[in-house]
Length: 342
Image 1 (tube, rainbow, N blue to C red):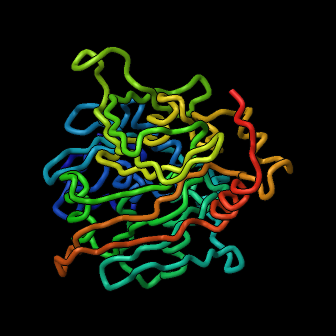
Image 2 (image 1 turned 120 degrees about the vertical axis):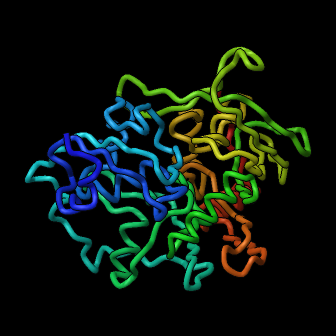
């Protein structure tokens, strides 16, 4: 095993060939452990890094932690030996200029970048098959010394996405998120007629892994403290109704994985187009030629994020108009009724 005292000399040895115990420094204060590992395990597929965390091969202060755990100076991260095959695409593949994505920039200054993320693009690249938002932007700005995601959006979710151009900005906005000082609002279309003008939903959520290795989230069984899981809170407001559908605004009070999707599915109002928790029969109908235009992805759009600027201290309200494909589908609902299957 490699001693802690030699960590500062090991930068060129990652991915490690022996167990390494790295002491977290001030520059990684507040960073998620998965992002911490991704920067150190260059070329290792993200799916494998998550598997290392789930299996307990990565440890923080000798304990298991989940991927979203935030680090503090002085923490000790155990990084196991990792072997990368010579044919790993990430070890040799670069983004061709023709494959670069042009992002709509909603806001940018020397410390912060905000884009309107398109649907169908992951925020992080997968196992070398494709490149995500962060890899795309780093390739487009090779002179930038720092660029990290402040938060995440699911692949099929479009809308406001924040990125930090400095470590201080990343740490401060992570602090605001943990303190509940960041406002996040989404627009989503659900199956069924929603009747309450405003409804607050508080449920405990548990993460689990399917037999196929996919991560999922479910509402914890039981009530109160017996339910276990992570408390999650969403406030839904009704924006418009059709015979079979409702357009809702979802305000996140907590930021759990798949929170909006699981809350709505549990209540019997699955998000249209949701391929994990939705109505699969309905999804096929919505994507067919029977509806013009059809809906070929999940109807979930992050339209507003409000934060306090980490440098100026002023409130920063960031908005992304509803994505074109989603707006066109809503326009079609005004003239065509699609029966919601159950």
